[in-house]
Length: 91
Image (cartoon, rainbow, N blue to C red):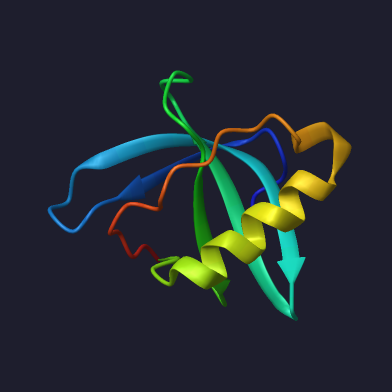
């Protein structure tokens, strides 16, 4: 997995590339999640579930809220804006 602060390029379902910076990888309830900041910093960060080498959007509202709450407990991310994850699955 990429290290914090490194750039990551993801492809959406239509093959269009999107640039992100890895903010954090956090574990919640034995599941790892990647927090990615889009290239346009005016947009909120997005969450993906880490499943092996695949990043899967977090589609469940309760799961999303659990991860955001866990991030907010970390002092360095208490003001991080997190948007709902886009519908992308990337390898």
